[in-house]
Length: 290
Ligand code: AMP
Image 1 (cartoon, helix red, strand yellow):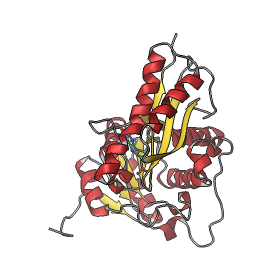
Image 2: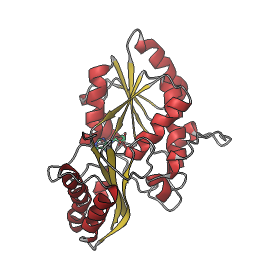
Image 3: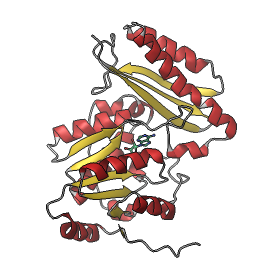
Image 4: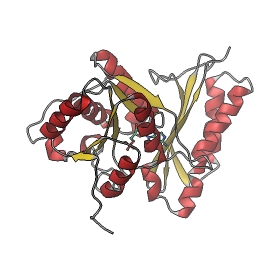
């Protein structure tokens, strides 16, 4: 039945309203924030579960943030499934969902942005100029509105994690970032709200991203420590699927996102590719080896 479900979880759009509700709810509890753009899947649930474990109060936000999309990107057709998302969040034990509108977050006269220079121009930031300025700005705003002790993010967006860690350090934000592992489909495809754009053929083609990462990881486990050789193997694997268009393959320092020559001190293997018109990303962290 549509629209008759009533929630016991609080769902609030207004910024003053959520501030007031949190003032009443937080008491001595730690507040955990899980920022999302909605169209929730098991990757998001894992963040909520991590928050539930660590925090007495769990707040999820659902906001498709216009400032992190370029004009040619998928902002207007990004999947929006608010009712279903709220049912899931309530079942996962979320206390409060924050669902602001774009006008509330960005009144017409808003002119302040957070720019994390350097790291924001690498990997996805190189392919999507301005993307991380939008991400850093909206996350800083969410932190100021919710004032969480902990905030939960997915390793799926590895460059986002690097940008946000740098922002928290640089601005002394009183929040601890908790980064949760990538949740995958049984066949290895990293879960993503954008997977719903894929046709059956594209869904198959998309597996090459994880395959390329696994080729890199296997080589490293066999003792190959030269980043250039891992990169060549990853790129070669991506090229075996001619239907996709590689955006980047990279072997980088996970904090700075700068290219590495040697992976023995740990490395981020990261790939991005267009499958049809859908841009997908994936990555694997290589731990330091002896
Ligand atoms: P999004 O709604 O795509 O902005 O993602 C919200 C949060 O969920 C971000 O911190 C993402 O990194 C995280 N996330 C998205 N997909 C996954 C996944 N497959 N595994 C773990 N976390 C994820």
